[in-house]
Structures are given as structure tokens and as C-alpha cells.
Length: 334
Image 1 (cartoon, rainbow, N blue to C red):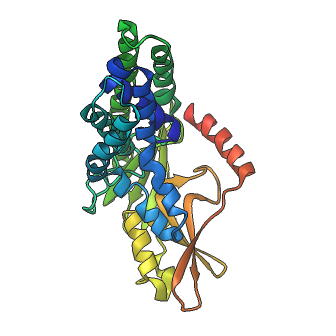
Image 2: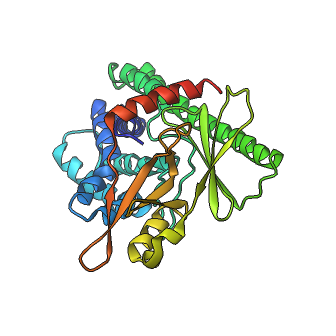
Image 3: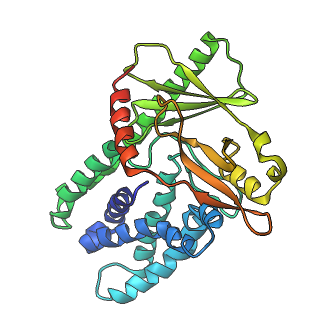
């Protein structure tokens, strides 16, 4: 999830664990704990682009990281606040829960997280977009109401628990909505007598009303969308996998690594002499557009040794405005 959401969650968890003893310090260090796992993006800036993608939400988002770092950070903060009512063990518990809830939340997004690192298993439930105002804003409001009250106030504890309950309840609702939308897509495929081997669904940006689906039909994919306000049947657009375009690069180590990141959901695009690797898990900017542009697209560039490197396709700010306008319109039905 986005940084603000992780800060709010971390602060609320910190308050729940240690708020009665140390007051707003619990929220402060909870917020810090909720931010720490995403520092892997800073590490990624010193690595090649492909490795940076691979390590994102890896080690720092694991149970191992939380278990190792919590007592170290707890010890450090206990030394800084020697006069506080909290012990080293108290601070360690705060950091553990602040660290571990970060990847637990990220596991609900499309990118997912390697919670069980070093095992090669990425959890990605794909039931919430990385930025969802309906999850974050009510949570933030309850946290602000709580932070203004004394640490011994019963209302403070009540507001914080309400924030955690409302956000958790909304998360449960998104899982139900995902299940309903999944059924809508499979019903549409059955009604259109389309045979498929796999289907992958996820919410559109900033909401859980509009949902997207990728459908594997063998040598191609079908892309579709469904809004809970739709009145017309679901239609699908075909995207060829086009893996033959890789030619001599089909067994390239770079392609294999990208394919693993994309969990097999990718298509190759050839424009003039340039090759592009399109990660289908994050969909396209506008499914209604004539020429589909994928959100995560990487140009495959041969180096002097004829090995492939990657360059992430740049996003056009003006085009993004049109995309947001189209998204808002599409949410309200076809």
C-alpha cells in the first residue's frame, strides 16, 4: 500500500500495543515501524533495474525481517527513552507488530509480498488497489481523533479500535467484492462459450467498484472489465502473447526473470525493431482505447554482448489525466 496508509496502520498498531503506557510516542514509533519495510526502494536505486524489481517487497517484507529487527529496534528505543514506562520487551512487541502488519497489508495488493522469504512464494490476494481512499481516509480520521486525547482516555482507545475495525471490515468487504466479480467474469466466459486455462482478477485504481480480469486462452489473453453498476454484458479484448517475437532471446535470463516476476502473465510487443515486455497483472491504462498501453511495460534492450537489459516505459502525465477521466466514467457503469 502507499506510504500514508502504512504510516496510519503502523501508528494505530503502535497505539494498540503501547499507547496506554507511552502515549503519542507509541503512535510515532508505530508509524516509523510501518515505514521501515519500504526502505527496500532506496536500496533498489543502487541496483540494476531488474534486480531492484526483484527485491521489492522481499526480505524487508518478511516474517524473518520482523523477528530479527524488532528486538534490535526495541533495544535502541528503550535506550533513548530510559525514563518511559515501557520496557525493552514492550518496545520490541511494538516494532514487531508495526513491521509485520506492513507486509500483511501489502499481501492484499496486486504486487503482493514475499512474507515467507527466503522461500520463493509471493502472496498477492489482489483484492485492493495500492491506493484506496475508502480504506485510508476513515482510518486516518479515527487516528487523528485518538491522538488529540490523553493516553489514559477511554475515548482514545475507542477511536483507535474503531479505526482498526473499520479498516479491517472494509478489507473483508473487498474480498467479498472480488469473489462476486470473479463469478461475473466466469459466468460471462461460460455464456460466450470461451474455454480458458486461468483467470486473474483485481480492482481498478482507487476503488473496488470496477474490476479487471486477465483470461488465459492458450496462445492469447482476453482482457475484460466489470463494474457493479454495469447494465451490459461483459466483453473481452484479445491480446496475443506473441512470444515468438522474442526469437533468439526467448531463453534469455532477463526474460526468464521478468516472466517469474509477472508470474507468467505477460505478452511481448514488437514496435518497429523494439521489443517490449508487458506485465499483464497491472493491466492497461484504458481498456477502451484502440491501442492498449500497459501500466508496467519494459523495453528489452540488447547490450554490447547481446544480452538484454530493461528500460521501464515512461508515463505521459497528460495521458494520465485522460486515463483518470475515463476511469471515473467507467466506474459508474457501461
